[in-house]
Every structure is written in C-alpha cells, then in structure tokens.
Amino acid sequence: RRLAQGDFRPVLLSSHQGLLQETYADVRRISELLQQLDQQIAAEGFSLKAILSSMVEGVVITDRAQRIRLVNESLERMLGLKQSPVNRTIIEVFLNPELQQAIEKTLFDGVARTIELPLVVATREGYATKHAEVYVSGLTPGRKARPLGAVIVFHDVTRVKDLEEVRREFVANVSHEFRTPLAIINGYVEMLLDGALDDRATTEAWLKAMAKNGQRLSLLIEDLLTLSHLEDRSVQLNFANVDLPLLLDGVVERIAPAIFERHARVTSAWDPDASFADVDPNRIEQVFENLLENSLRHATSDEIAIRVKSRRVDPEIEIVFSDDGPGIPYNDQAHIFERFYRVHKDRSRSRRGGTGLGLAIVKHIILAHGGSITVESVPGQGTSFIIRLPATRRPAAKSQETIYQMQKRSV
Image (cartoon, rainbow, N blue to C red; front, side, top):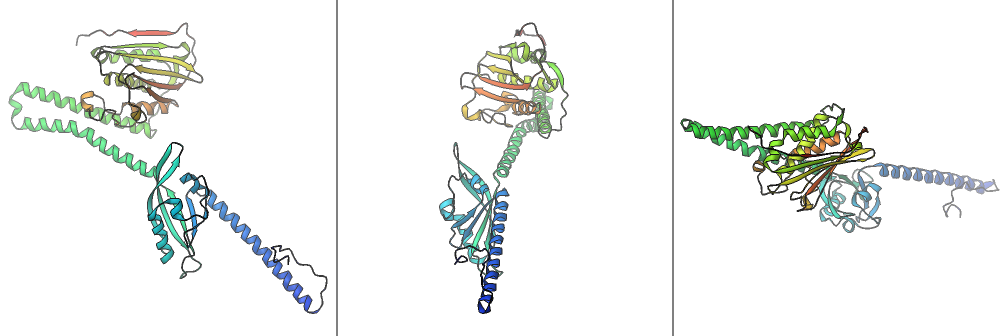
C-alpha cells in the first residue's frame, strides 16, 4: 500500500519463512529499484533545469499536439512573456504560421529545420520587433520512430541584423558622399580634355571647383580614418592637465573668419572649479571646434549667438555649448551622433559644408575620455550639447567670462 502511494522506503516484514520470505525479498528489491529510479528522475530533472536556465538561447519543448510542455527563462525574457506559456499551443503563444508549419513537418518526418523569424515582443514602450534564428528538432525514442514531440531553440540575432543594416547604410552613405565631388571633378576633367584649356578664365574657375571638391574628399577620408581609429581604440590619448578656457580661446581664434562670416556672437562663462580637466588637448580642441562649426553651419539666420558655460557636478565638470539656432526635431535627436545622419534630408551637405561625421567624432572622443555627451533641443528655440568630463580642481580667483568680438581681417 505504501509503495502504491509513492512511498519507496524499504518494506519491513516480521516473518522470514516460506513463501512470505520470498515475497518479502521481492518487495524489498522493488522498493530499492523504485527509490533509485525516483532519485535518478530527480537528478535528471535538476540537470535539465540547470542546463536550460543557464542557456542564453530560448528553448521550448512541445508534445505531438504542439502543446508547450517546457520553456526556459531565456525564452520568457526574450519574448517579454508575463505569463507562463506551458500547456498552451505554439500558435497561441507565437501567432506565427511559419513556425507552426516547420514544427508540423518535423513531427511528421523527423527532419530538423532552421528558419528565421521576426518576433513581435512586448516592451515598456509598447511593441518591438526582434529577429530570431529558430532550430526545430524532433524528440524521438529511437532512430526510426516518429517524434513524440519537438525541441525548438530560439537564437536572438537582432543585434546581428541591426549591425548588418548599419553596415549597409554606412556603405550607401559613403558612396553617396564620395559620388558627388568625384562626379564634379571628373566632369570638369573631361571638359578640360575636350579643349576648354584654351580659355584661361574658365580653366581657372574649373580648377578651383576641382580643388574644392578634392579638399572635400580629403576631409571625408581624414574624418573616416579618425572615426575608425576612435572606434577600435587604436588612438592613444595624451592626457595632460588642460586649461579649458584657454583651449577654447585658441579654437575661436582659428575659426574667426567663419564666425565673422555668419555674424555670430560667441560668449563663454567658466566656473573656477570647472576650468581644468585631465584630457588630451588636441582631441578636446577638436570637440570644441566641431561643436562651434556645427552651430555655425546649421544657423538659418544671418546672426547667431553661441554660448559656452561650465559648472562643477562632482566628480565631473559639465560644459554646455548652446545656440539660438533652428533646433533639432524631436524624432532626429536620438540619431544626430550617427555617421552621415542628416536632419534635413532634402539639403545637400556639400552646400552646407562639413562631412557629416563631426558629431560622431565628438561622441567617440568624449567616450574615450570616460565622459558623456547628450543633446537637448526644442525645435525653433535652439540646441544645447552637454558634455561631462572627469574634473581636476584648480584654484581660481573668480569666474571667467569672455565675449569674442570678431572683426574682418585682410587676406
């Protein structure tokens, strides 16, 4: 009776005579075998659970009716499931006929299959699409037996797909950026070879246009190499304790003609405790220059005010570059640090200047310094780029405020 109730402890009988003695020995052996079997099942169950829970891939086990019998935690996280899908059918949980058909075929012929599926996943923001490589295999008791169920393994390849998309976009963008100046150069070369060399004035004008586009190609290549080195961390930063206001003065002096041309007004206000940082001066100088030129380039009016200010936010300093330009649409703000990203898709970058890589370079330089950069913008009300860098405290008598007045210079 105890054995029938699942109690597999050894059976103890008081009599050891005759037929009862043989029965006692048989029952005791049955009890030991059942106890061993119970322990084996428990150990295998624990091992299976440990293996499934440690797997990065999502795993589903179904019976012949495609009813789910087991899932691991990785699948629940991958799909954002709030309730256990056990005892529900595949079509109920995944709502995907292609997956259902693949499992049906495997249950029929026992042949393993691999398919790629888009999966709609619930997130905090709503719904998102993930891409999964799915391997379907049959659970067979023997080589020639029909499968009693199926094992489905989900491998999340969303990141791989995203990287492939980024690569395609990058190739397309680079091709587009190189095509325009090359087409201009080739066009002028062909016209010069066709006999336009005799007209000196025309030849000089065309050569100037060719030189301008050749310089643009050189800038593109230089920025691409810089960005590549920053991304693979092959650039060695030469850290020094840098006076940031003095560094900004040098940048403003260098781009003074562009500031004068746009009738811009640049001001800076530096907190005494946020004026020094252990940085690579050449790289941070490049950051300052790119941000100033970005404000100048995208200004829609003849006059623009650019403000630079800093403050201490322990253990960092915060530097803010803000302008009163047209601002950035909300939908574009998450993408402006991407390579070649255009806020105004209908405008040619060659007319606006720049290579489309300036902000991407800024981001990677700041990250290489262990800092961060974010953007805040209200369309029509200007843009602010907020940089945070590890700080070095240096004493100062008072805060520094500078107004840069640009005057036209003779060339």
